[in-house]
Amino acid sequence: MIQETIVTTQNSTGETHIAPMGIHVAGDEFVILPFKPSITLDNILANKSAIINYTDDVRIFAGSLTGHLDWPLKKAKKVKGYFLENSLAHCEVELTHVEDDPVRPKLFCRAIQRVTHAPFAGFNRAQFSVLEAAILLSRITRLSPAKIHTELEYLHIGFNKTAGPHEREAWGWVTKAIEQKLRELQAQ
Image 1 (cartoon, rainbow, N blue to C red):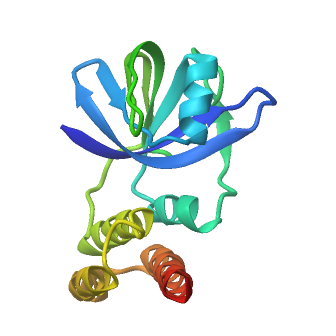
Image 2: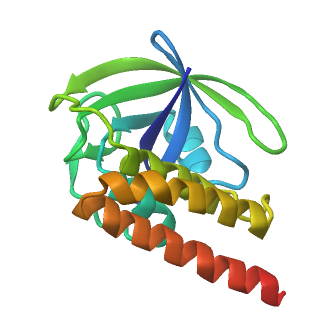
C-alpha cells in the first residue's frame, strides 16, 4: 500500500527538510523511494532515520513543491529530527537497509515510535484534487502539457464543489507553479 505523506529529515547542520512522498507501507516496514538526486535521500543516508508525517492539511503538500516551507515543527523523541506540529500523527523510522538504484533507490525503514496527535476526520474531494495536482507538478517534465491540462480540468470539478480556504490557497500555489513551469519548458 502507498500512503501520501510528508517526510521530514535533518541535514548535518540541523536544518529540517520537508518533502511530500508516497511511502510504501507493510506493517512496521516502510519503503521510501526518493529520486536521485534528493535532499531526502542524502539526509536519510547520513542520519539513518526519517519522520513520516500524516496530515490532512494539503497546503503542506503544495507548499513543499512551491516554496511555502515555513511550517511549525516539534522535536522527535526517538530519532534525530522534527515532525510537523500540526500533523495528525507521525512515525519515527530508522533505516535498516538500502537497495541502490541509479534512479530511485529503495530505503527500507522500520517504525520505532508512532504517535497520534489528533483524529482523522476524512478527506474531501478538494484535498484529493490538490494532492493529485501536486503530483502533476512534481512530474511536470515527464508529462505532456496536454495531459497536465486535461488532468487539471478534471480535478477542478471536484475541487470546486468541496474546497475550503486551505484547499483554495494550496490549489492556487500549485496551479500557478504548474503554469509557470509549463511556460519555462515551452520557452526552452
